[in-house]
Image (cartoon, rainbow, N blue to C red; front, side, top):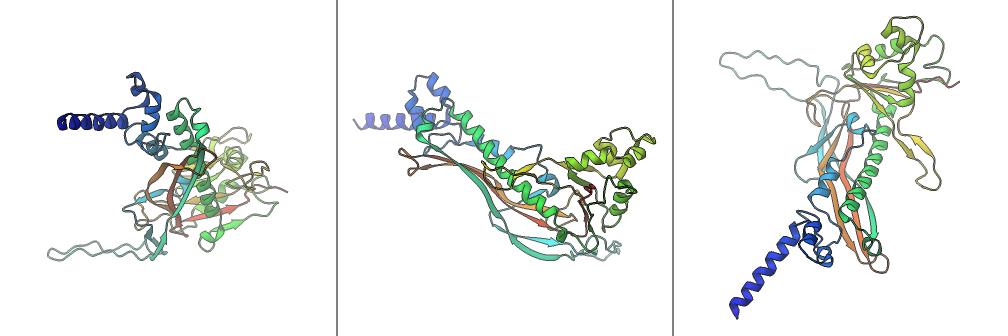
Length: 359
């Protein structure tokens, strides 16, 4: 009798293990009732026993890997994922002489090499949680035929909205004149800028590129400015060497003209009213031109870059049960990350505001 009990216990454990790691389709094909599939929440390896909707490695991987090509925040202020789980972090705010003082590299036959010392200002900050959740009542969950597809789509939608919020934060930082050194920002009047007589945008940008302590290697703007820039008569003349003013410059041609590695163009729009029924869509990126320098190997504490983003841990994805939702309860999808954007070198870039003539 005891042997039979042990055998039964082993078989039950084996069945639970199979249900936990097999997909819902596999279990159904093997004749397992749907109610059992839902009970064990078979969403793949790592699926949760506590929820009906699947949340395993596949869903987490989708959230981590998701990228919206229309958003440029990661190109403007690149993400550095920090080691460990500590929410506080340190970074160096670069001083003017930090990356430009050449040390004595000569080494005597029996002496030690000279040591380098970062002269930046040691600062500390704390990453902030940014995320959203999507509540799904059990009444709706019971009607979902393909729960895996439903969850995957909703997780991608959630993280896209979180990234849109990051785009707005980064745009506000980049387009703030206080985040640039003395003499490294300028705001044009309504009757100035591209479209005004005797205004040469080519000469203007080339002159401003020489003002920061490190010549910027990437230039950014919105699509309105980009369209105006690539069709500007002075740009066309400089690239195509003609006086007709006809032609359209490509991003690569603009990179070659201004001798930068990248032209970044932002297209994101946000609803500033935070009310879906009363829309007031505005561009995240205004009619400005900004340029930043970024060393290839720069980090929060080494090298030189205008700005970067600290992140603790990978992006977060989870599903939790909420018994207070509706009459039957429900489940909540959550997605987000812990990040903080910081300006490291105010003297490593410039900002030109309102570069298109409006009056």
